[in-house]
Image (cartoon, rainbow, N blue to C red):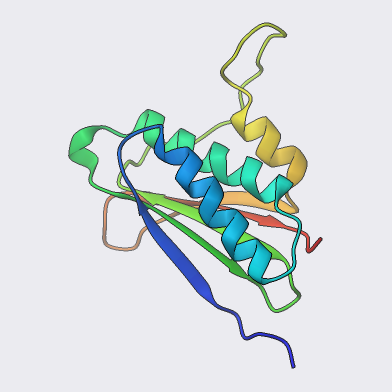
Length: 131
């Protein structure tokens, strides 16, 4: 019998060093499900980094969640209190920034943004095929 859809959540501190903790969390969760963690860690890193980079201290906490869909796909989402929408940028070949959403777009089955009902902010989500 397969494991029921479970949700795992962590509140992310406003410090880019926390991205390594998010990757450890993703490895732990995907390991429990016997899934490969490389793409999941990359996508989680980019989602969290974007949220931390564009949120201000007054925006409150950033929350990361990870789970599995009924078909075994892996989903991740990051919730923050900013209403700014992410957009894919064209990064030049020497730029160190601007590739995050491009990476997400390449690795995921789909991704998107949904507003929070009744609250300021949004959720950026991504779904990866089961591996």
